[in-house]
Length: 120
Image 1 (cartoon, rainbow, N blue to C red):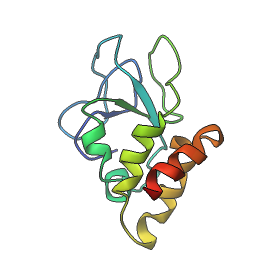
Image 2: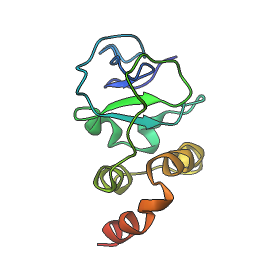
Image 3: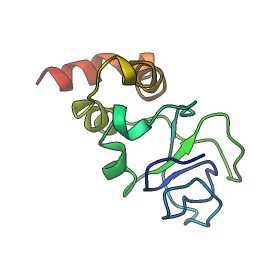
């Protein structure tokens, strides 16, 4: 499956290849893992363009895909969620992925903090 270039990966404890495809590549054990929804035919970066920039500081892993990692991805930090959602764009063609992303990146425990931050 092709995904936009960056560190979007199927592997959690492994990193993305820089040719824009998911794959297996070692990343530091200290890398912060953040889960994003399986694209399921959608383009994650079309819906959430800042994923490309966030992939420089987070190792983005695809939900439900196999990975080798010592643990599960951490919950999204409200600040990272805000960065991602602040640049969210698109129309009906990206709404499905954006909805799944919000369900993943904005857990109920932090939705007030994220909403307040986005509101300015």
